[in-house]
Image (cartoon, rainbow, N blue to C red; front, side, top):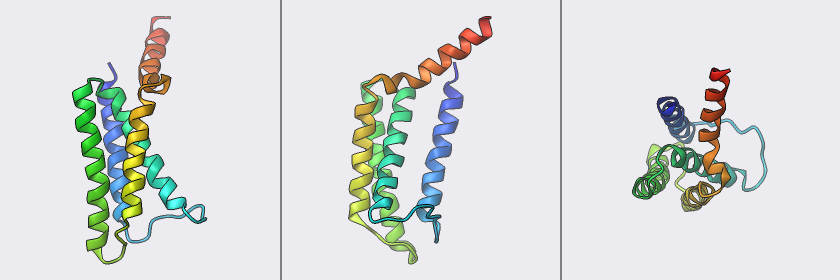
Length: 127
């Protein structure tokens, strides 16, 4: 029922990741060694978990996995070509690990979060 909303929010998230990844000077609210790898990991894990809730079939999820992993690699290549950011293979690893983790989390109760939100909003409408 809310599929278009979930897709719109997911694509906004993708656009935000592209923007923050390719802008010259991204915001750095917290600073300690490795924070950027955690940011990469959580961004891609969240994206995979989010889209797995919209695309529920196994074949769709495989394509989603490949697309998000390719996105992480592609962004790193673009950063290397841009001249003001750096290509880092460790970022690609963090991105891909995040995608894999998101896929795994989609098999848990977290993978039903959007369905639960839809059901609760439908319940609220029927009252």
